[in-house]
Image (cartoon, rainbow, N blue to C red; front, side):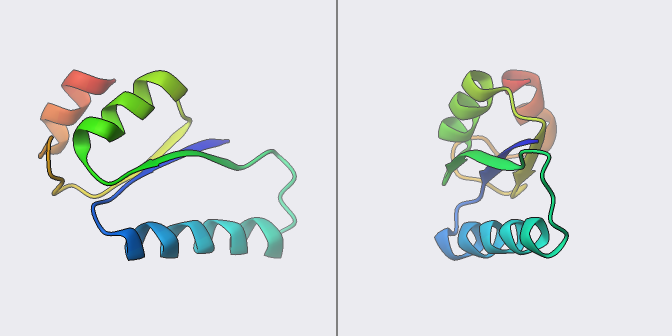
Amino acid sequence: MRIVIVDSEETSREVIKQAINTVVETHKIKSGCKIVGEAADGRKGCEIIVKERPDLIIMDLELPGKNGLSKFTAECL
């Protein structure tokens, strides 16, 4: 599973990455769970999503650059 994290707070992105890694290690997931990108704002997040085409996007809904889920999905997905 390819994952992209988009959150304006660096601390939040770190906590999410740690949580994902803990789940993968604890449950011995071998299906290739990989964080393929992260961004601090909506514009960069959109660029990464278009380029990487992840299976899962973990995103803060109040982002600098592209705010609002409907606008973000309309322009990036």
